[in-house]
Image (cartoon, rainbow, N blue to C red; front, side, top):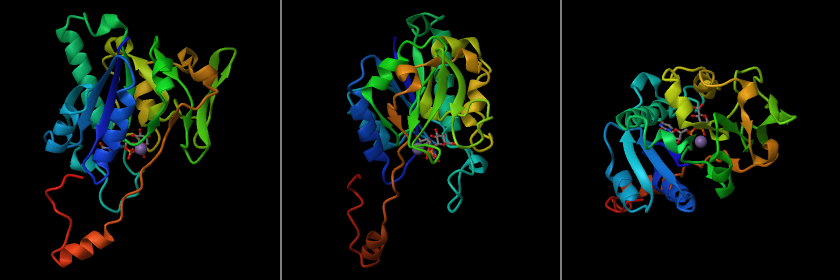
Length: 258
Ligand code: UGA
Ligand code: MN
């Protein structure tokens, strides 16, 4: 089965570095189709050129987050969901392509969808774990929720609850990196989307609650005992010296892409 990886991404100093790291992981994964969705009003040169040279099979989309749904300078990072409109655009593209194919191609391949943010760290084993997803598969995520890891708790092969430190009664207290869904399930549930207005921590639930119940979740990574993905977050680079140099007319050459 093909794995369709949907990645929201937005312009910032570390964007090309993040995409480079991610693409080098994906180059090692067979049958991976990368759906990159830029949070921008149109495709950017940087991402277009990057993808063309990446060596990956990809689709390049864009969907600007409406201003009232977007974090503003100075907002705490958790105030509004990030990447929701971009993931929905990826889902829209997949549904439209499946409809155009008349269900052939895309769907009969029992393809899988995974939402991979551009800043996390993914092991290669993770992709083989998710590849044979029937409905929704789940596994632990490291370094998330202010804990060493969060994970579904498995008893007798079934998910019975979730190991998490915060609001464990959310419908699905799982980070975006901790699940994959089958394309057929998404096609069978056309009302399943991410709610860009979801309360903090409820974005994943807004999508999953239209697709499965906890009992139906398929535990992977040795019954959720192994951490194969890490919710790493990249530090924002300091530009103090750059700004000082710009004032003296000695800033770094703006024609050099970083
Ligand atoms: C956590 C989860 O891991 C995310 O999957 C979830 O979307 C997010 O919380 C949330 O609750 O909205 P976090 O590390 O805080 O993630 O979020 P980011 O990594 O900053 O953003 C998630 C994705 O959205 C990234 O791929 C990022 O490039 C993209 N993004 C972020 C945009 O497309 N536009 C933005 O303005 C910000
Ligand atoms: Mn992140």
